[in-house]
Amino acid sequence: MTHVIQRLGAWTIARVADLGRMLNFLLYAVYVCVADPVRPRHIIKQISFIGAKSSFVIVLTAGFTGMVLGLQGYYTLTKFGSEGMLGVAVALSLIRELGPVLSALMVTGRAGSAITAEIGIMRISEQIDALETMALEPFKYLVSPKLIASLLALPLLCAIFDLVGIWGGYLVGVRLLGVNPGAYFGEMKNSVEWQDVYSGMIKSLSFGVIIAWVCCYKGYYTGHGAEGVSRATTGAVVLSSVLILIWDYFITSVLL
Image (cartoon, rainbow, N blue to C red; front, side, top):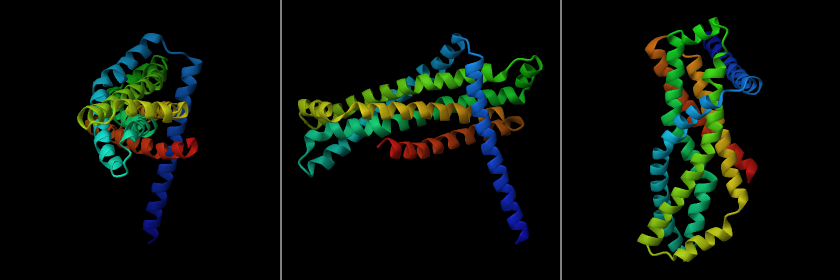
């Protein structure tokens, strides 16, 4: 029994220490962004990788998400004779919740995993040690550009997701199922407020920080060898996805 309690205590202490190291990592990354600004070309390169190269999967996911919302929402609202409110249901679902969350999860799977693998390979091949030996700040070249690029790219990807998703719902609801197009967009215009848009953008900004933070951290402190990189990549995707969903609940409870 004593052995079990000791192992549990050691595991708890290790997890708390890991959380503290993660927080220090984020705070230092923010400090480097402010104290030693990154060159714009590095940020643009990361925006291209995180944002532009993720646009296809965002558009594809958004289109089918909006189509599913339009299909399910129509058959649900038909039971209450409220088919005209389909546009409101689709828009609010996308703008407040599904747009920020699903776009962040897609970016995590496509770009976040690549970020972790890239930094992890640099760690095991001692490239990061070489930067430190030459008195160069690794955070300035490896972490800060990705953090800033995620902050800029995620809200834009979320806006694309919302727009494409709304048109996907229009395609199914109006063109396929016969909902009045004036009612679809008219009720949407009357019901969707700027507060809904702001809440979605705030979520996207926070999700961008989570993705860059967790993925860079896992890569920076990866284990040895190819197995260490694979474990770090898997852990980064899983932890980022879980934190996105948890943070979504807490920030929604605050913004409501």
